[in-house]
Length: 486
Ligand code: FUL
Picture 1 (cartoon, rainbow, N blue to C red):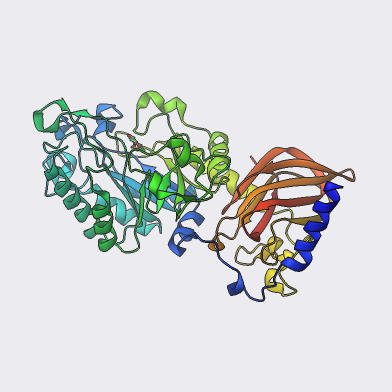
Picture 2 (picture 1 turned 90 degrees about the vertical axis):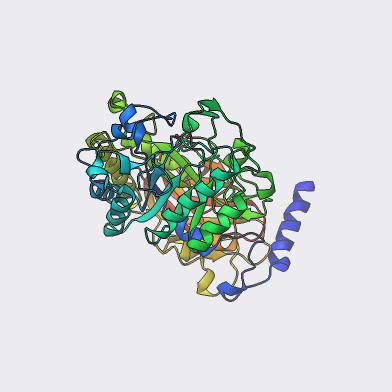
């Protein structure tokens, strides 16, 4: 009886409660939506990190800040080799660590002696940030720079004077090298360091010391299109671990009043918040090697293409951007094995997603906004991410049916929400018609820009997606059905 009532109520909502839209502009947007810049950023999917610096030569992960600049001496450095490998490996952007926690700068900053200007590299006349940006531009890659807030070399670290120093360096990086797409503010603040010879532990109040709002405003003033990363945003946030894994439930919305740069709850960062007041893109950073910097002892531990693809499924496939670090070696070059494995990842991605087995198949939906082709379910399988399907307004559940026409083997389903309207879906299920029987295959919570679901290969001739819970009418761009190609 109870179930019948529910069903009648459901039908009532479907028939009466749903208003029709006639154009895309009629779709009511969610309260929190991304900027167009954030959407373009997330569509890049996979980008790269380049950790290179004094640690490469001292074989460390965190330099103390007392290193002699004379130790920095790459003999064959070739930023074009990095950029070409990145491009051929499918990366769309590269982020260079211009200064790590040891304070050693890869550009000849005029505010410190702890830089390549006092190293043997190019007789002290080198500028690796410049070589890097030139190479990236030549290969059509977007450019990001990492400027560590924590500086274990600087004598004033922990004092007010250091903030002016940090902003001066930021000014150099955002003024002298053309358009920069992303700046990376790291959250680590380990405490002890050289600090100009003081050799002591300095604690800072993470919430107030850096006065981030002023620094963020300065950065945006210098580069209006810049996207700023930190563990707490404002545009891109850390995913809460360094394995490259977003949560199985991942909302691009988050409550920024709960975030502190350098001190945010990692579980919260890993899941986002459906009730969040800000849209901040999730970014999953991970190194292709165990360490962030190059260590020859890790040459046999480079992640394989299959391992990287598993990370891709758990980052890009969970509504986030994947940031893969490839650390140049002491020569100043990416190692062969790193390049091969990155290309191997790209090959798996290209071969697997080249052919959507649902393209052009017969597709129906339990509810569609109007008869207009603008919202037709066919748009989900037309190989075009700019066309959408949506239901009438306020429809909070729906079913989509794809007839594959013949028995088809597959093991990956991709769902894409049209996030310019907001991220809405919080529960869905996938069923497959196997030997005439609708069988549950997989299910999930959030979707966002891309949700990839991997399962053991099945053979089926139909697929049903049920949207079981959504904060407003679901708006989808595409449905993908794929067979993994290793
Ligand atoms: C961390 C740093 O402490 C690591 O050295 C590395 O740079 C990583 C990407 O971020 O916070």
